[in-house]
Image (cartoon, rainbow over all chains, first blue to last red; front, top):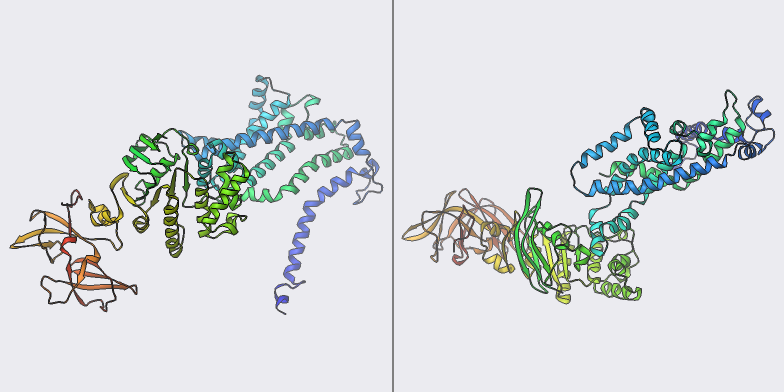
Length: 281
Length: 358
């Protein structure tokens, strides 16, 4: 049979592929499995000899997290910060990227290099200057301050990625839009942005994920309990040397859910987003 | 429909001037082709008419209205780009009706006008498709349909046929010409292909280095080029341009710089002794028997038979001369051939200024 040549169900090569894939999946998925399973275990189960399956499934850790530890507030804070940063980032980086690829002006190249330079600066170097700056601006210990700081980190990458996308939209399309009846701004919003939708989706996901997961800057800048984000609140669950594994893992599960949904919906764009800008010159 | 006037139009990018004071008057309903080599400024000029490039100096008026400061959408023009510039995320019908949609015309009117244009261009079965599902020729027609739907004052074409294969290009040439006869919309057509310009335009503007070299009807330009550039640019195969000088020892003749002599039959000749460039088109060199008085002997280097005619490259001593013979001819490289130039078709150009001697 002709078909059997190309699709041997149990060829050695295939078995190796599956073996490699299975082990990679196991390595990646096991911590997630462990996180979920631990969040559903009783304290006794957790501190006993580690078991792959709980002797009794319980939601006590979740109840404790939301009632005693008031975890809903940090989740809402995180949602507010990540969404705001994402929306503002997309708007500003769209205009910035557009101006850098369509207009000629003095120091355009320098601006481009500065943006990349800002992106490449290690975050930890900027802890002290940023905290001083925020304090002087009166934005220390506030969500607004955190949003501003996250924006300063997300904008360079977003601008950089979007430039690649905008470059792949032929200039003539935009000019045709202007002849058809758009202003330049109209052509950007109605022609260029829709055609760059995968890029916009990709930078939205990058930005949202970055802001959602960020811990170190939040730890430096936010002190009051009411302004804590989810990663920060999780961190504060640990008091001295006591690690409340159950609520911690429950919090981790809750924090992961929005990202998992986001990635599941938009993974197609993620891959496109990471490759498109770089190869289309 | 409207007339289009360009007066002393200039364009500079910083200190770099690319258009040096171009003035062209285009009458209502006229089809004008802008031709010239790459980088001559023809596309820039078209984009300035469209409003996609700013005007540094001078004025552009459409229908008597100065449009220098109007945005593209307010100039009432339609443009067909070389890349067609169809919106990939819209259907053919939506592409064609987009300008009317932005003008907030009623849906029924848009549908009607799109259908009318689609009927003219045989696009009705394709209206629901996306541009990616169309062939190059179909995309080209959609781009034209989009221009027609709008019923603009002026059509602007920017090398619209350059991306098509040779056969389709010829077919589309005819189609655009027919369309112009039918709609009679003022048209500016940019091309680097002089055949397109010759066959389609009422009038041709030959440009070079941001300047207009000559303006006129296709045949006028072909027969009476004002300078060496126009003489060499229009016509395929190109005009033979032979450096040398006129000599007069009883009868006038032209001494070709590479050796050889071409007899001249009088008429208005440049003063003898001065350096000149003699121009003669390949079809104005008639093949004659060797015993014909004044026949010039040439050595054949290459023959290119197309079936209906033959192009022959031959050498007059060191100088290459191309002959276009409107029939088949059986000559092989290395053989000798005799030609006689048509005396009234010989042009003389000043090699320094490039201007034609009149």
